[in-house]
Every structure is written in structure tokens, then in C-alpha cells.
Length: 165
Image (tube, rainbow, N blue to C red; front, side, top):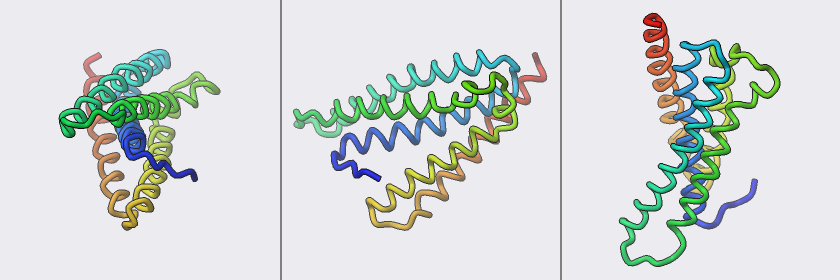
């Protein structure tokens, strides 16, 4: 796998992938319990890809500017760009099953979102642990715990609210 040597680009990529996975799996876990229309999932996922991607990208830009007040380099801009690109791509990739099968079956049972999330989180945790020369479990266990908590809470809210529909 290629090495990302630019720290600002790497920061944006890791942030974007992590945020994209956790946010999108939560959205899908909740929404898929309340609707049978795939277009609602598509609209919601694309909305997150754009609005959350832009908001977080600009947020990291401002955060880096506030952290390094004397820095006039392109680091904050690079983080902004790479965060948006990585978040947008990872969020939109949750829609892959709908390209082949216009049905929410793989979303309602949460097989696709959870398996995809586990695979991607494992890859980025493996990369980060290798970069930092630390045990992968240091990142993997908290990631899996976050994933489970988000899925349980958002699915529970979706199930609860669907009863009032």
C-alpha cells in the first residue's frame, strides 16, 4: 500500500474515512428501520457526503489555522481538500449495493454497512498502527466499540420512531 508522507493530507484522509464510516453507518442503521424506499437512503447518504464533508473539511481548516497561528503554509488547505475527498468517497461507497440491487434488504439487516465498516476501519487502523509502530488493537478495539454503540443506538432510535409512523 502506498505511503502518505504529507502529514496534512494524511490527517485529512484518516479523519475523513473515520468520520465517514461512523456517521454513515449510524445514518443507515437508523433510517433503514423506518423506510422501505431506497431513494430516501440515497438522498440522505448523498446529503451527508456533501454537507458533512464540507462542514468537517472547513472545520479542520479552521482548527489547524487556530492551532498554528503563525503558519502561512498550505497544510490547512491540504487537510481540507483530503478530508473532503476521502469523506465524500467513503460515504458514497455505502451506496454500492443499490447500484446492483435496488432494494434495502442489505441495509435493513445491516449486513452491508457493518461488514463494510469493519473492513475499512480495520484497514485504516492497520495503517495507523504501522505508521506509529504501535499495536493495532490500540485503535481497532475502540473503533469496533464505537461502531457497535453507534449501530445499536441509531438502530434503536429508528425502530422506536418507526412505531410512531
